[in-house]
Amino acid sequence: MSLWFLLSTLVWGPGSVLLTVVLLLRLSVCIWCYLWDLQHCSTDLTGKTAVVTGANSGVGKSVSQELAHCGVHMILACCSHERGQQALAQIRAASQSNQLLLGEVDVSSMASIRSFAQWLLREHPEIHLLVNNAAVCGLPTTRTPEGLDVTFATNYIGPFLLTNLLQAAPISRAPFAPVPVSVPALTLLHEDQPPARL
Image 1 (cartoon, helix red, strand yellow):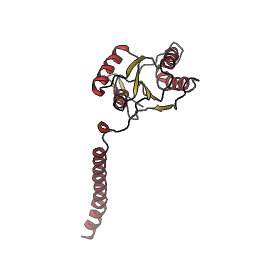
Image 2 (cartoon, helix red, strand yellow):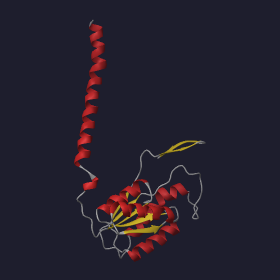
Image 3 (cartoon, rainbow, N blue to C red):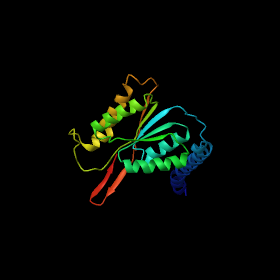
Image 4 (cartoon, rainbow, N blue to C red):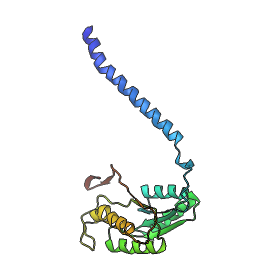
């Protein structure tokens, strides 16, 4: 009888504590989500200008939509004009904002980034927020015209160059806040390859 008591205490005791902790954490997350609702965000960012790379889908599109809700003058930096136009229309309809622009930039191309940065600083000299969201994963090994690996150029060199070009511009008088974005558990499945993880 004492052996059964010892085993049940070791097995069920810690299990009950763990279950209680998990339930309390879940309850606290539900309460937090109820109290902090993005749809009713009272932050007014009118007069601020933000640039989001990779804004045609996923995290970039969601960030752009939420910033547009807050009154930000949004510049969607997308590599595909067609997909960028679709995202622009969807964000405009969801946010009821008419302060949205589409800029075309291929973050893997240094020439495209330089051209985009020149256009951006000429048209909008005060950039307040840059969200470096564009990224790729699981692409076959290919080279950019500059001789860099496409994945490395898109995920590291491109955002670094864009941030430095915008931050170092002498005409930019606004406080500048670059925001790097990463997706810790991005998984792409291919039939002929094992999953690639970032």
